Image (tube, rainbow, N blue to C red; front, side, top):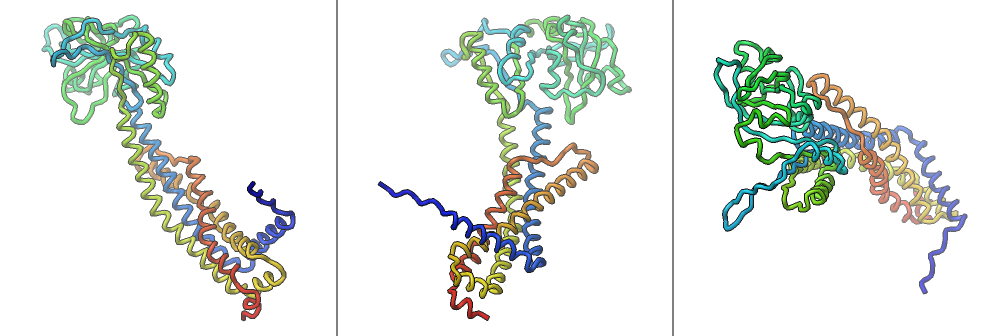
Length: 423
């Protein structure tokens, strides 16, 4: 039966504490040297924390921009409208057509923040009964569609849930379409005017912002207005159900929950295609991780220099206190006590340096982002995460133990007789 490891006696614990106290009191003997050694750690940890905080802030800002301008939080559900038989596509006629009841149920799926339904077709748009027709892409949608596709408004508003429920005769038009029917004027001048969609009058309540390279004409109308404004037969096409996850991190779980909901409601998930745009989010996360690792490695060089400075200070301390070490060993100090004494000095320097460096690094990161907000008009803020705080704490332990071990071992190996005779 293996013998149990004996517990440390109270005398051993007292000796260990005494060694730590001796090491800490030695730092006060030469305060200037201690401050200079600590300064290297402060700069190293500060640079590392500043880089990580800026990286966290940039990632948070980029995620927010992607969430607003792209569909990285969206789960797209489309009915399968054809079967492949004998190498040919055979259209299905019984595919589900999502409606308001589906949206209401899908909104209760775990992890889903909001739901929208859209379907698109083509239409003819005319400014008045005697004007020229323009072909436009028209999308029938729910009132919250703007937040799903980043449809920013230059003027006016999107239609309301009440207008969607009542199939109100309103429309939101693209920048190009507004400019086409308000020649020589700013596109917002079209607000309140009536356009004819396949001869059906609709009041323009909103104008979308123009995009670089925008081509063609587009418009949005309330969900139930599709059959009235689209070309014949287009309103019968499949409708897309879009589920927006509460956060980017919940997209995968929201997708799995949506597939279970579809199977329960429609009997077979094979009747639908469920997809996400997570690939873009993962690429972004990998890019920022690479940035933080690369910049952290560069900042780590200064931390390495600080550790070398600590080792220098401790080696000099061993040389200066050789007789003291010899006397301590002669009166009963063990090698363990000498090692603890010098490791306590090393960890004390790195611990205090890391604490100050953490504050210094955060101040630098917040100052840099404040300058960016003021000069570049970018709403970016430094991020403070548990990982950043853990790096600061861990660096104190690793640097202190790594660069304090060699001086401590060198001191512990000194012969008592030779050390006492040292001049």
